[in-house]
Length: 265
Image 1 (cartoon, rainbow, N blue to C red):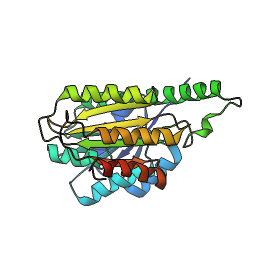
Image 2: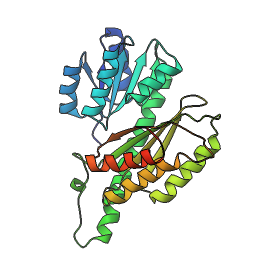
Image 3: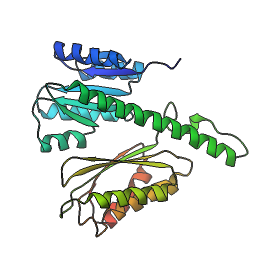
Image 4: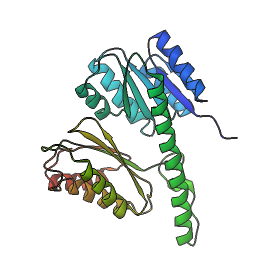
């Protein structure tokens, strides 16, 4: 029997906490409650939640800083933010700060279920690819390797890159399809690309890398993708990069490509 997954709920509102706890249990998840960052950090260290529900009771700078710190503490944990004040600008800022989804209150349970299902599907996809990467590498090596060769406490992605772009011309979804095909071609199954449309002109692109066996190769592959964002088909764009799981030299390598393509970190 598979172990149950843990979920972290951060809210100061009792009713909101009860509602989120009830929804979590319906998805067969184990909820843990925290009212502040200190309690959340303690829970993260103990149970390693796969997703965090973060309730924004206001749009204060402190809430956004807490979001960024939570993502730095546990980069592999997906975050769903709830807010009463909603606009495309707020949603963009929340996602840029590290959240995976931004939902408006009062809460739509069906929408939240859909988000959780998407996160669960990605988690299963990543774990499957991590296992397949180990098996593939073992076939090429005289001495088999184990999951501990991956970064982290279990087989996990070594890097996550978020790319946000704002084309000057109206965004063409066909261009995105071409970019997905291009990424898959150079990744040889080692990368996963997701796109979440924020509005007609803004998109959040999430690129995940699974094979850490030749870090130099995939770092340069990532840089090549960043550079290719300047394709004339897409138009001039500003790209913001968020690097997780990279050392300083690897980060500088990607920034080299970003500078080369006149993009900013």
